[in-house]
Amino acid sequence: AQTVTQSQPEMSVQEAETVTLSCTYDTSESDYYLFWYKQPPSRQMILVIRQEAYKQQNATENRFSVNFQKAAKSFSLKISDSQLGDAAMYFCAYRSFETGTASKLTFGTGTRLQVTL
Amino acid sequence: GAVVSQHPSRVICKSGTSVKIECRSLDFQATTMFWYRQFPKQSLMLMATSNEGSKATYEQGVEKDKFLINHASLTLSTLTVTSAHPEDSSFYICSARAGRTLYEQYFGPGTRLTVT
Picture 1 (cartoon, one colour):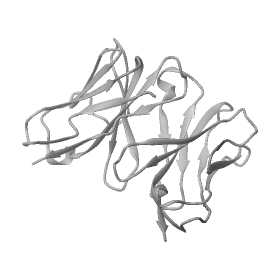
Picture 2: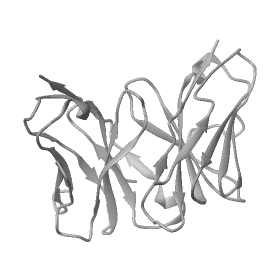
Picture 3: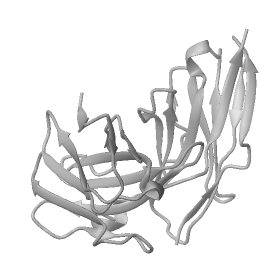
Picture 4: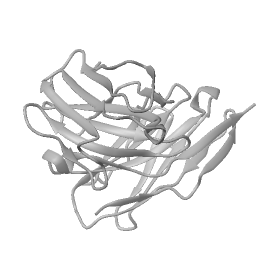
């Protein structure tokens, strides 16, 4: 079974600064997807960024980028130019490449990000 | 974009009663829907996966007779908490996956259940 570990329960960053959230995972599969989801106080889960394991290039979405290290099974999220609206719970998630019931997401325990002025 | 709705957003029920939560995909057909449970300050725990027209697959430790899941159409799945008890109080989130995209899951806004 796959596991996802987020070792930072809470992080804090000043507005306009950069912060990196860590995520490691364990799997025996070679093809899979990794995600970062944001859950603001409204509790609505929002997809931040996605990475396909077969792609060597790190995914980037505006101020959000990842550092995907497949051999190390590491998938960190970097938020640049942090904004107050970035304050939320961030979950790292793993999904098998297979379809069907194996397509379920496995979530990490989350990192609460505070953004200060 | 793909939108998933849940109804109700909040529900309070008495211990021993049953409550139904609806999850709808508004602008796409959801071949697969997922039901999660989230306790305060904790992660999402997958309860079950349902495919349209077939029985749900429950995760280990989830009582299928207590949490009844029906995925009767490509746009609607329901979760019924039967004989609810205070320990069932939680935040329930559904998500839906469209057949046309293999990886994307679209999440509903969640339902807060309080059992008194």
